[in-house]
Amino acid sequence: MRRAYKSVLSIYAIALGFGVFTPRPDLVGTGGASVGASVGTPSVGGFPSIGHQILYLGGFWAWVGNFLMLVPVAYLIHLCWPRLFLQTIFIICLTTTISIEFIQLYIPGRVSDVRDIALNATGAALILLYLHWKKTSKNRVQ
Image 1: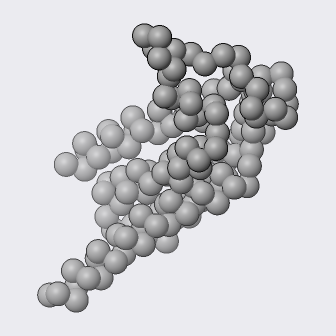
Image 2 (image 1 turned 60 degrees about the horizontal axis):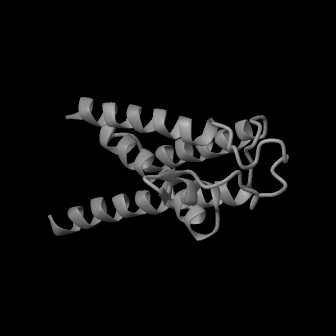
C-alpha cells in the first residue's frame, strides 16, 4: 500500500511543481506589480475557467489554495513513512514552502509572499496536529 501512497505523492509533487513554477501570464512583464492585471480569462466551453479564477484572480480562493497546498504532502509523507516524527514532516513542509517562494523570485510572472509561506505552513501544521491528536486519542482508548 505504501507504494501506492508514494506514487500519489510523486504525482502530486509533479502537479505542484507545474502549478508553482510556471509563469503566470497575467503577471509576466509587470514584475508582479499589478496582481489584478489580466490577459483575459480563459474559458472552457464558453464558461470562465475555475482554475484561472482560483490561481490568477487571487483573493479568498488564493488564500484557501495556499492553506491547502501542502496538506496532501504532509499527509502522504506520513502515510509513506509512518515512523517519521511529525515534527520532521513539518520541517520538510516548511523547507518546501520556503524553497518554492525563493525559486519564484526568479520566475518571470511569479510573486513571492511571506503570507504564502505562513498559509502553507499553517495548513501542514493543522493536518499534522490532527494526526497527532488521532494517534494520542487512539492510545488513550487502549
